[in-house]
Amino acid sequence: MNTNYSTLHFAYIAVVLTSQGYGVGIAEENMPGYVPRPDFGIFDSFAAAEQQAKQLNTEQLKLSSERAYEIICSSMSRWSQQ
Image (cartoon, rainbow, N blue to C red; front, side):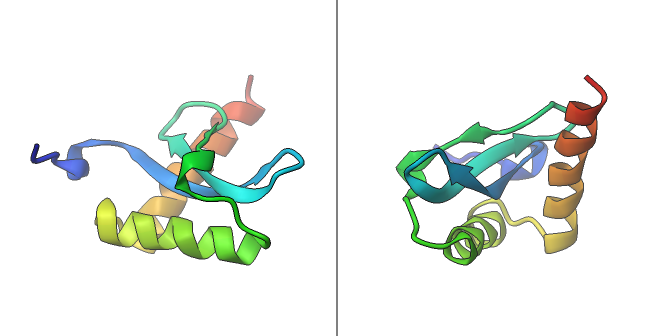
């Protein structure tokens, strides 16, 4: 399957997984919040989860850091408006 990720509007983000440690979640553009994805790994530090999220954004989704931050921030601003 050849997925064209450039048409998808989501980014990976480092998150706190309740009592499990840190992990990766998916933030969808202009949608409030994020979806935790512990299947991407559970990490001992937030920095390690953040590195994994950045790697997924650049290598899998081909997103620039700036574009990933835009998507992530849009999910935060929409959440705060609810």
